[in-house]
Image (cartoon, rainbow, N blue to C red; front, side, top):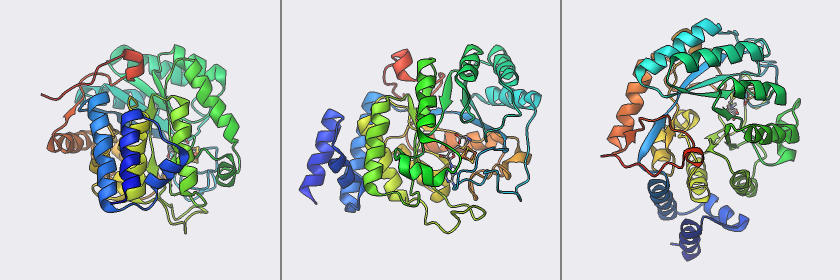
Length: 357
Ligand code: SAH
Ligand code: SF4
């Protein structure tokens, strides 16, 4: 095996640091033994830094309306054939209650950028969830004003997910005709300043994205000092301008996840649904390459098909209870265990690495 790759992995594992060139080497085409070594190093760092627990988050996709037109996404506003839905706050609350009964300690409320949900509506909903259920609340609703983020935080929102998608402003402009990279980064900084446990991330395999850009992404995400980092392969949607694109590769996405764990030992890193959609064992393999979070779908069944960020998403036909059961079995099979706490950022709680007995 290439001795330089081995030495780079060893140094990265020992120090948590790597140069752009070293990361390019690890992300590029490596021999299978080198990839195995990289995954094993990430798995060791995951075990010692954050432990063996896998944290589950119930995902409720509450609206597929979106005012934006991101080229890669099936929810973009120009996708006119998509039948749109909005779940009422009452129904979202009922769904969240159901998730709490199943044992979830975190609910993630996700949607397109949908102004129909005013900040007051969302704040009231979050207060009700926090009053009734012993759950942390994460929002993933895109860009809002600083004032709105402040009010939502005050209402009790614990965490916010906002992917930067790529650290390259030039690539970002090509994929987002109506959005500004610097503005999005500004939102992330605001969220951090307001005390949210903040998550970001990128997509792997975007058209025009190079391995060098991905190495930059890794360093960028490390420097942002995030609580959570979610990455997944880009999966082309046939009704978007990027229908003919190639999309993300399993091996490259896994190598990226592994490098993330080595660069950010404390971060919460999900094994994403997109990875599970790309490959039947995508999520298991990510859990063995540094990941420690899963986000099973808890959206009421009748809406699942229509939350078409990409097509072919796994588990669209399963009730929330089945989805949870399926991931609990996956976690147990792997000799890990499901986290029983809220799974807050360790940077906020100072929690120690938990072992599964
Ligand atoms: N509207 C919000 C949240 C929903 S989209 C937002 O954009 O922040 C959540 C994530 O889905 C996006 O950040 C993007 O990284 C991912 N996504 C969108 N289209 C995708 C595709 N075709 N393949 C894989 N992931 C995609
Ligand atoms: Fe809307 Fe988010 Fe999809 Fe962009 S990625 S079109 S903001 S749902």
